[in-house]
Image (cartoon, rainbow, N blue to C red; front, side, top):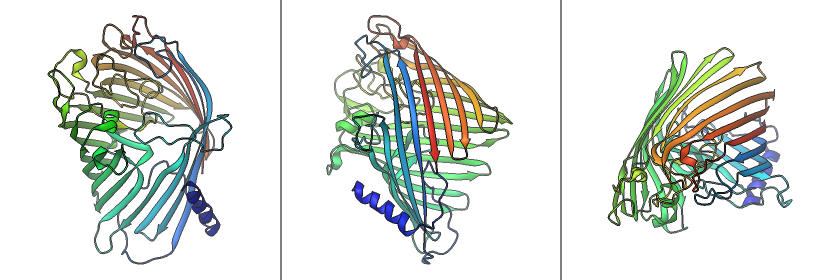
Length: 475
């Protein structure tokens, strides 16, 4: 299959050598508004885009070695490597009513890793907390078309997706298999979606997790406001529900109502999102009294802002995501922690949530539970202030300060006393634009751990530091 896709790309380049090269796209094309009548074929327009990225990483994580054990008092986990990633996108468009994309990616391949050819690595599913090195696979493969005679469009296939501002569901790294049916009338777009989030056992639908939902988005003068309702269905929990949602109920029906806003309000660019969850997991082991039904009661609110002032940009974040009350001795069977389904890209901080476990838990065994990676603001209160100053049109420097606190007290690495003190993080940034299509950006992070990261022997976790450099050529 991989060789076949590569041959398709080569054939496209050979047959359409005079096609224009499109600007690089990090995200999938979004459905647009119909402009002409369908049924007329005006030829196929082909375009090619992509990127070559090389990153260097230097980590000194002070909380654990190995797989972030909650019981062993491990020395700091040190990582130094250089990795390369390639992305290649082929876009095809026929008139105003039919377009599609094939995108292949060689996910981060470490320099000198057994001197193997690019892409000689295993595949990690989109919901996995970590991806294997050297992964060569399909990042996107979708078609988007309007049904002749009616103002309804369909986008089907493997596509990059997120709901609202992406704080409940975001899969913008590897993408998900999905159907999206939409209608765009004036400034309003109504869409129905069916997303296969996880498939634990092939050809066994009772092991799958699907998102079914409806979204209504209204375009404002300087932004958009949207409402989405998602039904997360897992007929039988098995592995995937435990991995993603953190509760091994035998049958799960969870509902997430999200309201999001992203627009310019006066001089400030604002983003806001609220998510509220309901539903139940049958025969859960959570709480007291043995197996029984657990109700989902999680919620979160996220407010982000950016104030551009000539060469200076100031940004801020205020976020609150509910946590699991059983951490503090509550005997209820309710799932109070907000359940998030996020990819493993960097979402806000360089160290917390991206490199180190958060205050959120992915298991009901709260006595020995580790925190989890890539959980957004679950069981986290966060306050942030940052600034970016452009020294010139080529160079910018900035910083981000984050105050992090757990909503429910937690002992992430087996400390004897749970705490809500997660810590403080400062991230410094240097953005260097060498050419229009070439940038070399750097981040340096320092994370001062709070008491929630104390080790099992009562000692404090060492401070964590990280450096990440990204040389990126986009075409």
